[in-house]
Length: 322
Image (tube, rainbow, N blue to C red; front, side):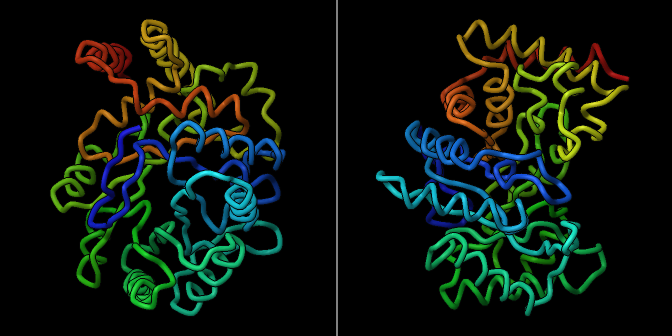
């Protein structure tokens, strides 16, 4: 894979990174159901074998378990060590219910916990997972704490996730923002209007999450499979996986599969490549729960969509607009 510089940092990242949300397992508010840690480690190793050089996780994924699995995978990996990105600002209770906490004291506790779970001395990119309420001064307190952690050498670079343009501006008044992590896919394009152009103009790197819409655009998701999702899989109740949206989303998958077949690829790779087609996007976070899944998506960075194919996708949306 080719590499790209992430924002104002010295991080040279591949266009696709391994996303460790799902491998956190069950037992919390936004779980994907139970996972096999051995499969998860094999998925990470296969992604690294295919050239991926960064892993994105978060303290809250699996209530710390995702970071622990990432640590085990990296420790048992004999090749070049990948960059490790993680996030702070979401805390959980005994029932696995999550809330935003961005006080300086809380973040300092979180970074120590993450360093311990990940078994590393410094985090390559530390990110605020979600902003607080729009008018809350905790944005400034949280971001100032991350800037202090960078100066102290606990983290190398600092970024944010799910921030608006206004929130990015507030953070930039305190310290430069290396990267933004927004949701972005063919069915969630809200960031195109303002956020992506702003980041491109300000030199803020963008690593998008859920480019395959949490598995919906992989080509493997069907109505029957969705019906059989376990009760502790958050997707089961999500609007994207239910009518009246599901029919259109699955029709989009059919269109992506037509394009994929002409390249000898998968629908998921086409969906990822589409996000990377946007010049504001530095990289895409791609999840896989076993080695076979990793093989089906981690080379999406090598797929170049033609102008005609991008237009074909645009025409699909025009024809199915509601």
